[in-house]
Amino acid sequence: MKKPIFLVGMMGAGKSSLGKALAQGLNLPFLDSDEWIEAKSQKSIAELFEKDGESGFRLWEKQFLDALNGECLIVATGGGLPCFHGNMDRLKELGTVFYLKLTVEQLVKRVSNNGERPLLTDVPDIQSKINDLLELRAEIYEQAHFILNGDGSIPELIEETERLLVTNKGLF
Image (cartoon, rainbow, N blue to C red; front, side, top):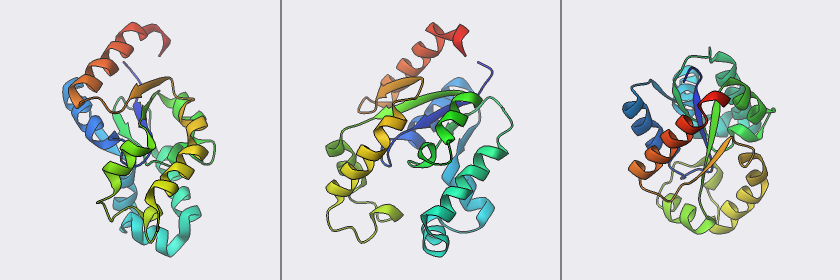
């Protein structure tokens, strides 16, 4: 493996959790796009959304991708990152993309108690909002090289990811 591995999917899909575990298992560096953006901007994601709006935040995500140097690492992307500025095509050019797929119901369970999601702030019906976002994003997410059932355990997801990388070694 010579290129980055990108994990995409909705907020709450487990991209960061899987990414950290996968990086540890493969002895590779781990990078979270939201953490990078917060460090570079010196603002929280919520502050960026409040100050610059979603469009301003999406420009930070583009800067994040532009800053990648092709290093072999595991990258957890923000939920919307692949969906703007042609970023999914860019991710696929730079490395191998895995989509962590979950149902709306599974995602709602995972994000309902987390008040740090700007797109869910002051939303009266979280399930409807997540459903609407997923309907908009699913077609883009499904362009990933591989789709994983995100409801599996971390060890199961690592095993499946490694199996797919090994069996498709010549493609990437």
